[in-house]
Length: 442
Image (tube, rainbow, N blue to C red; front, top):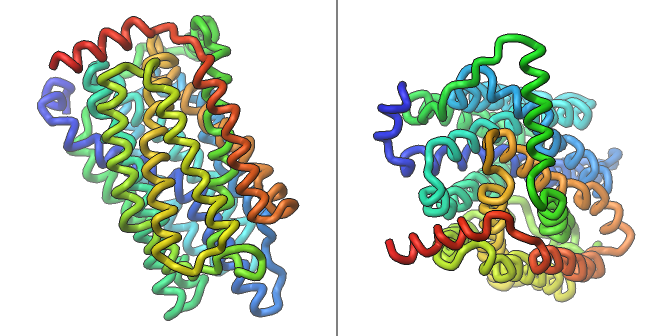
């Protein structure tokens, strides 16, 4: 399909599916894997078999997700071959097959090692997918439309999150009662794979190409181009401020998000909430996604109206203050599903509202220039680093402090996010303000 024909297809027909497909694998590797391993670990412990400690679950699931942090190393090569659409469709299809295989290895005696290897392959595949998917978004939409659809982007990214840790977790909880813990998770991983294969087939027809690759025909040209991508990235004005901002904005989130599923599943005598898997899926699968979508869309219009620079501290507050919900649940250990659900909804609304600031910052401050797709990948990789670095050690810190003191620490860890949001300089502030003025008038 040519770009001329593709442009006739409204972004409303491909932005939602593209970012659902981007969000779902990321959450599977970073969050659902944690819940799966915790569930299997509790099952093994009940049988008197060696279980997997929280510290190892947090560490190894974070290490498996490192390709999202390292993707700038191969992002420039995607500028040189085929089209962005080609890589989107291919990685969605191949990653779906790998998710199906992951379900099969859960029956093996050494399932932990094999499943982690497959999680790593899946992470590499979908990190590559994200580079190309974001490239399509940036290449096919004007800056005004990027701001208009950024709320959709964030909302449907988290539709993937809702499907993965909401709907599919409910199914896992339902099935494990009937066919066992391992059987339930096997079936769910295969369902994940089938879903991604179907999305890839939809995008064969509906996704615009995102533009053709550059005409680079030799290894020398490839290396020269890669060097130029890196050089021009680090020559950007205020780039080190940008990096500091992207790392520390997520300092608290990286710790809290990784441990929260463990806390919800852990027995109450150990300071957790002792919730069954199916109930956790229900808590995530109804009102929290609605809250996230509403927060994302409102933040998109709010930021487009007054500009990113003026709205950043507000976005930061919405992103971080709701982590107090974690501390509240850890301190009080409520038994009421309603109380727990309200706390999760509050956190999701704030998370959806505040994450828009990160997406727009990368789009408008980091990505602009000669290599938009590659530099966007650099920025999103730094975002992943800001999440993964604290997440790697969060399990050890949680084991040391206990859930209550750990989530109090998470609140203290929000301070760097406020500082960098206040101090970060803007190189494209004038363009951002002009865009906001256009939105206001339009």
